[in-house]
Length: 159
Image (cartoon, rainbow, N blue to C red; front, side, top):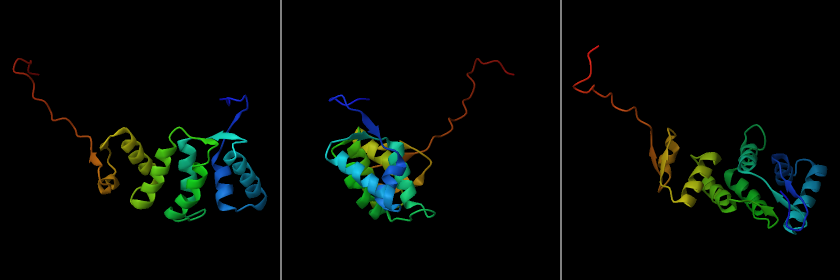
C-alpha cells in the first residue's frame, strides 16, 4: 500500500500504541510520541487493523498488565484513533465500539465491535450464545436451534 505522493504507509502494531498510551518505557514512549506527532501532522501516513485495536484494549484492560478502567482506555485511545494521518477504513466503528465498551460493561471489546458493526450495517439481530448481548438496547439475540426431527413421508420404506 503506497501513499498518493509516492511515500509509504506504516502499519502500526499493538506495542507502538501501548508504549505511547502507557508511557511505561521512557525511551520507547518518547519515540512513539514523535511517531504519532508525525502521523498527526500527516508527515507519516499509517494504518492498522481491528485485531490490533482489539489487542490494545485487551492489553490495557488486562489485570496482569495495566488494569486500566474502560473509560480511561477510551480517553487515551480515542485521540490516537482520530489522528488525520492514521487511515482506518472503519474509524467510526472503532470509536463507537469504545463508547459501547464503556457504556455496556457486560460486553468485552470484541462484542462491542460486533454491535458497532451491526449498527453501521443496520442489523438488529445477532446469532450468539453470549447473553451479554441481551443487555444492549436495539439488539435481539437468537440462538441456533436444532431442527425438529422430521417424520418420514407416508410413502417412505420402513426400515
